[in-house]
Image 1 (cartoon, helix red, strand yellow):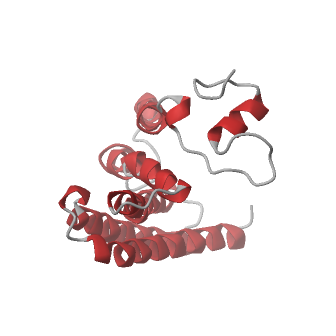
Image 2 (cartoon, helix red, strand yellow; image 1 turned 30 degrees about the vertical axis):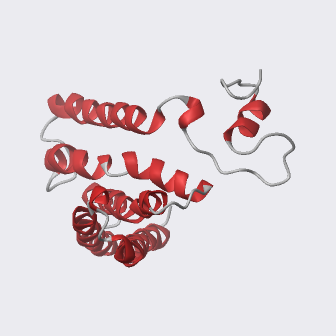
Amino acid sequence: MSEQIVRRLGLAGWAACVALSLAGVSLLLPYRTISSLNVPQQWQSAFIGLAFGSVGGFLVSRRPNHRIPWIFLVIGLSQSVSAFSLYGQALLAGGSHSQWADVLAWLETWSWAPGFILIPTLLLQLFPTGEVLSPRWRWLARATLIGLGLALGHLGGGPVDRVPVLALDGLPGDQGHVTVLRRAGISSPDSGR
């Protein structure tokens, strides 16, 4: 990939961090009195998303092939998505049950993890050069990524019939994940097969 395309991807990542953080904060304002949502903590996530996303976007514009800016962007996106997706929990707490609210609520259960896992692990392992200290330390970087994958799989996976999927218009049959599972040849407890 050319450096210009990589820089544009970094700029798009930064813009996504800003948009998701600001949208999350503004959408949660009417729900700030619901104590179960812990809105002030999500505002902190939005701030972390803005801070790490901005630093990552700036560094990508200067050093597009360096690993550290991309880790900053992933942390920023993780926290920004978490701040935005709490809106789904707010909708459900407010009594609005829709597929989008379910998807956002599910996304909120695991989207915070990369941001919190990557800061004390991979970011510190690769800082400041973008490389591990020596080849002997590569196993730790790999173990970190495997651990992150396992954590995300555990937090976001869950039983197949509990993971929300938006209904696909134009497909015959049940709505949501059941239709998708039937098309894939997989059965679930409520799919009737």
